[in-house]
Image (cartoon, rainbow, N blue to C red):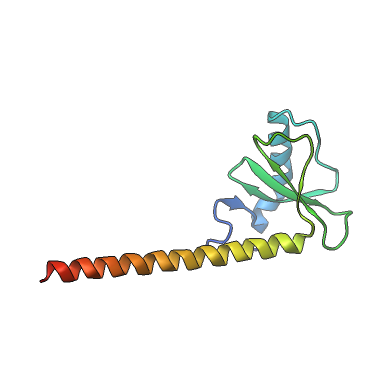
Length: 124
């Protein structure tokens, strides 16, 4: 991700400067929730959202490892795999961001059309 993402993954900690502390924060979240499973020693926590969800992979699981998630409030005893590969996570997030941008673009166009129509009626 780097130093900035221009809205991509807004509300989430994913940037390079966030990475050092994410594992520690994730471990505290597990403890606060009395979660029975501990993070594996080789877990690399790369994503945290709003302090209640984090995603990680294990560095020993290959070049394109599965991605696991913890979500506060979920009734689970282990970390579910949310993507079979890290690349799937990245592609999924990019697709979601692109979809969101298109939806915002449509909503703006609709609003502008309504405003133009209202202005036209007001001027008549």
